[in-house]
Image 1 (tube, rainbow, N blue to C red):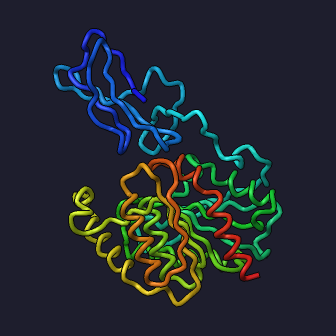
Image 2 (cartoon, rainbow, N blue to C red):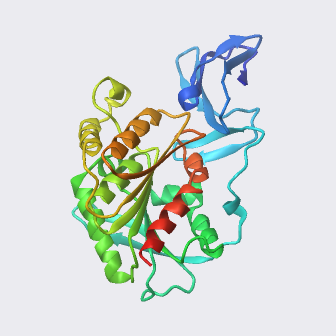
Image 3 (cartoon, rainbow, N blue to C red):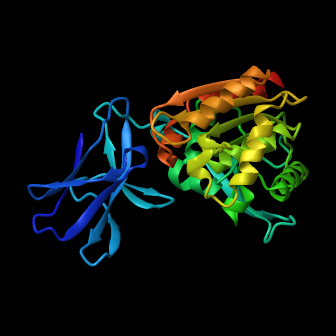
Length: 335
């Protein structure tokens, strides 16, 4: 496939495609800036162009030839879809409605942990029900429609009625990079939730990217957690393999914790781990190696490579079937 940006009068001195592993400089020819993209095995692609004027001014722009636009945590992007791409069926399925409450969990972290708790209509505080904690809750709410996912699976009988905690981070890079203070605060928040609601069975945890790393760290150290899904976890590695991430301020702390995880025996408590990653993303290799290391040391691991990039829409598309099965196995095993 060729992505093109028209520029007959050479307004720009350079154009680059911003599309994760597919990005790079474009070539100008016959009035068009173009870049070829190999789309074999790719279902969808989020991208934008960076244009540079002759006086050195650089700015981003969407593809005027593309009608599909997606909202991301990094601004709007154009979206290419393969001919056979289909959105998840649960997006348009009948769903149980819920109510949302807003809270802040006190902690030593500045301002505490802000969160929203989604509760299916009819479920009272005293009614025992499972709990799913979701890191980057606002991202999953806005970009993955996670409450529709929950309501649809409850309505279909795939999952029992459960409470969904949409937790956010005021300082995401710091908190979600293996911060001991954050992990303590999250454990305290789970205690506060158990005081507020009747929590039944093991807790489930979900997160992506740095939130995926944090989800695994939290779950490994808390016996109340029985299931965790890390999507495209940021398992940055020391040495040459982690060279592209080495400029990140929290890289040394993350790489040290990743090294410890990869050599650790399985937790003493029952914990089912699911790791997924995209075939076209930078975290592919470190997720493959994390899955292999945990499996080698005897952890209960389910791993899957999925089509896609390091985006919230791809994480949305990758929730099924692995997350419902993971939670069902954990929650139903405990009655």
